[in-house]
Image (cartoon, rainbow, N blue to C red; front, side, top):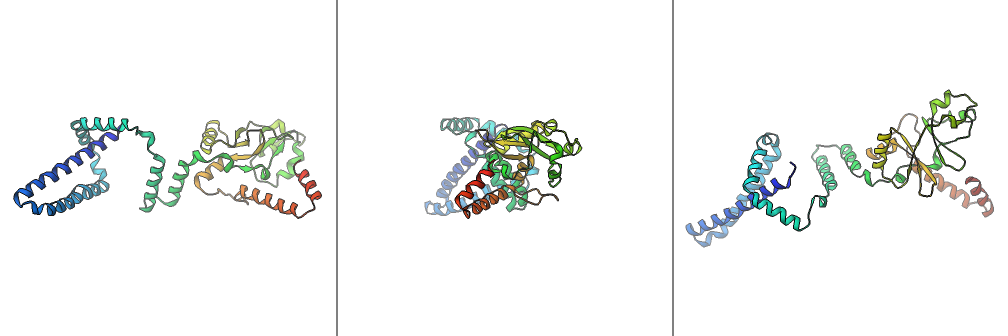
Length: 304
């Protein structure tokens, strides 16, 4: 199983040799016994028999009874590789000379094709096929495509007093909140339970826990690995210039794998990214309907 190409080369070699010499031998015998006029008929019959007896029937039996064939097949293949070793070595040299290697095989596409086949044959359902395909594509998904934009994020300022934010916090259902300063530099994360237990005059900065900082260009696959390794559930996303863009959580990555939103009884907006885009479009429409001076004033106030 370490060199799967060798048994394949042995099978193909034996198959080709058997077909070639078998056809040549049958043709010669037909010419001797019946004359050259029957060579065309013999070729047609031989082609049909080869197709049925050496292709369709063996492959169908192998696909149907592969579990019964597994115990004795390795020994048979090893013997076949041994007696056909010169041909296999020649095949390896030709393949190496042509520059074809394992890296040229698109295994991801092949696995996806297998999942499609499994779905079509009712071996996999659509949810299983979708999850496998999404896992294979996870390395191509960038954080900026799955994060929650800053415009719809609930966050706290590090110098805020706990008592000043409790009323507003009770209207939300988040378990943790990112903490920034006035310039939106990251400070960490605080947990809702600790805020509720804290003294009203305590500062948010006193309750901060470390939070992971990532750039918007890393992949969801890399982020998932970092979350699992560092036992984190949330990361703050910044661009290359240090501008805070939003938040990404373990739930966002899992939703990417599942291909659907994870909703609980406290969620009232299934897609925060779509909600943020809609809010921005509504803001543009609102400002476009105002006089230029008033629109500029509103835009300036929003950016503060």
